[in-house]
Length: 317
Image 1 (cartoon, rainbow, N blue to C red):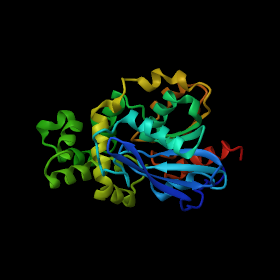
Image 2: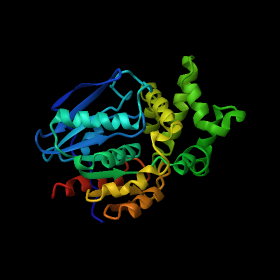
Image 3: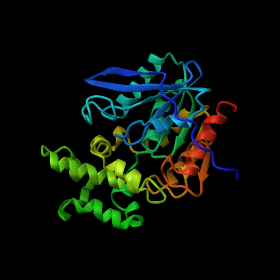
């Protein structure tokens, strides 16, 4: 195989701002690349993550006009870490408001992990607005995927880290770890909230990479990131991502005719490849590309390579 591709140079936004989407929420957004070039939208992970400058490098800035935004309660969006009026379908409608704001008829929808969930939900509701889907680390929000992360699965691989994660919760409350963490993340006591946010986020950071990444874990432990990530993530897990069980697979026929590329790490501990494979079987047209020496993170060399090649190919480059 040829040498791994790297991100394009990180450029500054040519435009940015806040969009009031109602219900007390205002979203931070930015556009990078070349105004009027091929439209794309970046959907960050989580739920509860946020955009960062590094994410801008996944497209050729000369060929794309990319919108990145912080979802409700995330990053620079306001109110900080807000979980009220915050769900999958409200974010889908936020995307439509952002698309209309930009004046795009259609756009490439790009998302990894929870971003892949959101991308699929949006594409199934608004297929006429999606020129292509570029997805990474497929997560379909089903019970078995929730159980893998918070009951038994990832815990069998990252055993010592799992013990740290469950160590915050008394043994009598471990039957429903998501509920137990959510109760602490919404506690009136700040110290309780911060401790729960740190442990939740560190567990997520632990399963995100094939090899240990101390810098990534340090960023996950930062309260400015850990608090919205953990609060929003726990709420969405608790509410089954506001979808019926198996909804995204059951509605995969709505994706017919949309070109798609999935970049999936073979050793993804967070979102195992079985979900990508099941989506491929339900949506045969999609091009599933397994990266044999990668885990979950978009920053792993093989995943970065796959995503940059995918966005290049979709311009005919």
